[in-house]
Length: 145
Ligand SMILES: CC(C)(COP(=O)(O)OP(=O)(O)OC[C@H]1O[C@@H](n2cnc3c(N)ncnc32)[C@H](O)[C@@H]1OP(=O)(O)O)[C@@H](O)C(=O)NCCC(=O)NCCS
Image (cartoon, rainbow, N blue to C red; front, side, top):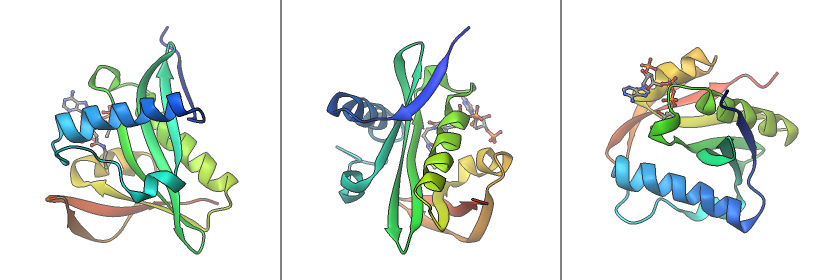
């Protein structure tokens, strides 16, 4: 049985594991960034790390934008751990943490290819798609009540 746990990345080592996974996916796999996908939001983000049998396989970050409105982003699961529970557990943990932070709203800009994944998890579309880094993204929101 493959056991998956999602936890807040607290140590520097764990946060570096998150960045490493993001590099693998957003720079190498998707080529959305040429050198690094890190940005100013990382400093104030809660980084969440998914481990499968102790091995880091996925990550997501959440941060407050303004007025207690929180955003999730950089959801990434290594290819070898896709089609399993890692991605759903990461989103579940992100929502749990947003609730603990007493977020008023929790939103995310989602690549159009992943909209169905979020719809299956109960997220709703908000407004129209927008291009970000040359890819169409859909703003989505989950119900925190
Ligand atoms: C988005 C992501 C976290 C979803 O995790 P997952 O484990 O793949 O989730 P699922 O198994 O539920 O699959 C999600 C979708 O990807 C498709 N998919 C997953 N692995 C695939 C593969 N190897 N080949 C083709 N399609 C695949 C599934 O069919 C599903 O499509 P659908 O929603 O239209 O039915 C993961 O695919 C990923 O890290 N992708 C790269 C980074 C990314 O796009 N991040 C999201 C930014 S908004």
